[in-house]
Length: 171
Image 1 (cartoon, rainbow, N blue to C red):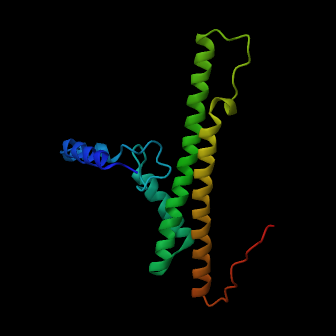
Image 2 (cartoon, one colour; image 1 turned 90 degrees about the vertical axis):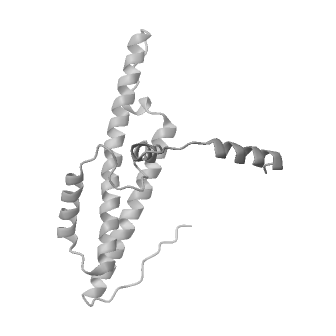
Image 3 (cartoon, helix red, strand yellow; image 1 turned 90 degrees about the horizontal axis):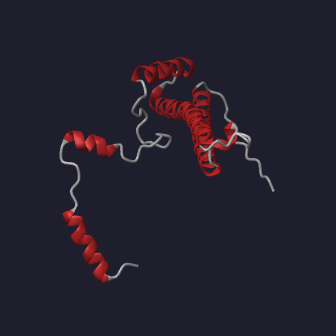
């Protein structure tokens, strides 16, 4: 817990703080935390094509045919999760490629030819790879939940009896 003196010093420092003042500066600052966009609040991140997202959304909408506000909401969640999964795959590919190229440059620079060069899996740190896998699993679960719920709502709308969700207890 901070002392009274520390709290006072923090408040004085906060008063000196200057954030971005212009719209341009605020737009840049808004993206400070966006490194890869995997967990971004924004669906479309820099360097992504708005038209491609719209086409993707239209294809899913045509396939899933949502009706009503609830189905539309679930449709939006499905599009967002599926789009983010595609982003993860692109990010993984780019990360592995960049790390492998960097590893190979270092091997050449330090003349380490007598040792085997790192393979694709060895180039990326285990911690980074584990984090990507967690992000991917989180997004996949979100996608499957939304798809399952949309299916249940659509079946209910068509008059089908919906059985309760099946739960598997793994001991």
